[in-house]
Length: 282
Image (cartoon, rainbow, N blue to C red; front, side, top):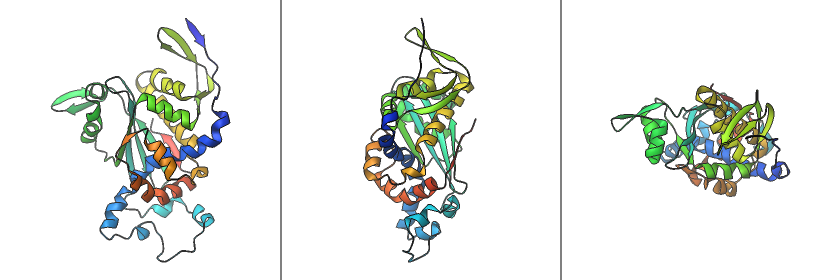
């Protein structure tokens, strides 16, 4: 049995509230980037100089800070920071996994989806990402780190249900679909219609898991994650605060702390105000 759905934005009336909450998703992706600063600070490293700030300069206003380009942070200890995002229910199928890279000097964020069929070495055996997640879900992140040349600064892990709750809080995103895409749930066939689709939390996860297979599915996952960042990552979100972070971070298992967030605020705001480029690797 086939059903054709017309997708509407059920959260349109709540966008203003969602926009303020949305600041924390990007904060969480970036707060790990300055965790290195904390170690340097403990060893008497001048963080102000690392960010290109002048000593004893207290005259800057919000409007002046808002004009800072991304190049203002090029002298940070590192220019590139990498984050690992994993989503799926424990003991079940991996929904999606992605590497997110932030380059400060060029104000660029890239999203690279990881194939569930990628083979990793795990305790002397060769297993796919999907197999490790299904059988050893809490070992996947460390195993992936050990098998990759990339150094990941922080990780974020969440279940399907928490991903949907998070996106309900943030609001729907717009995804352009080039042709009708059928998908099946419980023996019922539905269709993502060609054109502009407003994907709510549940539909977004279905799009990221059921809309294709192989390389095309990875491309769809990257497209969706980029849409989330472009929709909710704007300079209008600079005024978010600790309360939003505390609410947001509860959705994740992560090695990011509130201390990381507070220390990262200036760098995050500078990047937000520089209108970063957000693109998929594929």
